[in-house]
Length: 175
Image (cartoon, rainbow, N blue to C red; front, side):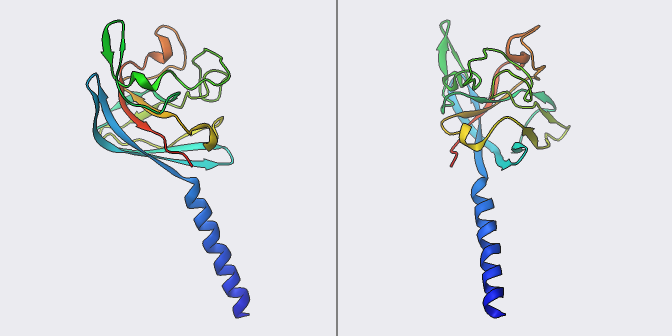
């Protein structure tokens, strides 16, 4: 009986250990044309049978909707475009391994990196969001981006959902 109990405790501890390894924390930093700024929190990413769950714990996020995306490169550094330095432009565009070249809803057929928009309340708190098409293996070598404005999941009337300037960025250190 004691051996069975020890075995069950071992299995329980092993399952908790495996579950803990499935989560990835991404440290998020403010970004501007001068580079990467102060850390403002993190986003925990968990893999479920329904896709990836992104759980933000960010301080200072202005109230309202914010575009939220996985970008193709593991960098949050600024880069020059049309003679002007742009925040976190080294992260590249939205992750799009299928080459759809189309911004769409997270459950649609556009960029795989299109995530549900973050909605911040008056205190800057947000709820977790689900990305049903993503797997943890998709994230290695990518960046996670929060934009200053909302996202309408279309390229009209503004490109890439109208999220605007890149506000915060984190390099994903996926397992």
